Amino acid sequence: MHIQALLSTYEEASGQKLNRDKATLFFSKNTDSEIQDSIKDLLGVLEIKQYEKYLGLPSFVGRNRKASLAFIKEQVWKKLQGWKEKLLSQTGREVLLKAVVQAIPTYSMSCFKLPITLCHEIEAMVRKFWWGQQGTRRRIRWVKWSTMCRPKSLGGMGFRELQKFNDAMLGKQVWHLLQNQDSLFFKFFKGKIFPHGTIFDAKENKGSFAWKSILKGRDVIRQGLKWRIGNGSKVHIFSDAWLPGHRQGKVISPVADG
Image (cartoon, rainbow, N blue to C red; front, side):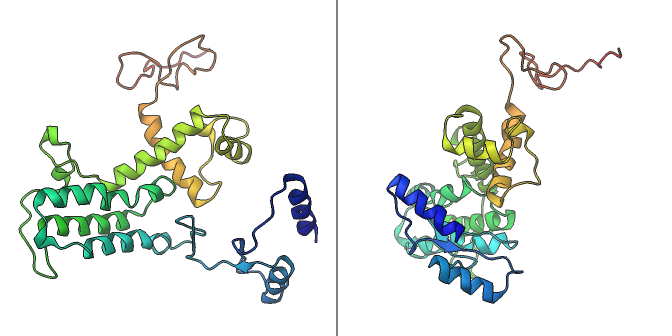
């Protein structure tokens, strides 16, 4: 009843009405079925299933993260099956793989850290299509895929390494949390996860799978982050990177006692 009252107050104050056809509930396994039914009847909304999606992403990611994100692999497979390999030149395959197939996981990769095995399986499908493999009939792969992922200026083809691209997309989210502190995105996580510091002070054992995924991008930002000295009030001399021209940017001299 209290939730209903809060929702009614919000609707009256904002002029926005809750769409109960799009709203869903998720229950813990410890919740009795009778309690679940009473809550669903009271609120007038449905219970969410484990792998349902909302706005293109899974509404709930359980322990089996690969199964929750398997729809990405299915989308890639459908695209590849719809193209006739024999009618495409090697240049045509390159354009389609870069512009269409490797763009499919981009949105998901900016929100979640994809399992390594899922990235490998998607890359395997891309490799087979590139080399023209049909069914179980294997074609010669003249160059290693890691070489194909190098920039063209370094002798590669510029294909994406999905794991590194995933880390880069999550790193962008970390950068937004550092730079755009007026956004709702920042205010939400600031109040919930790191109220007394920055994202670099946040603990990894708190938050959802989406938040823990963003923390994977924090490691990428931390590797290349270096302070530009102003008045130096926020810089920890011995632990932060701030020295110009130095590869690590940190003081390597031992801290003097006393």
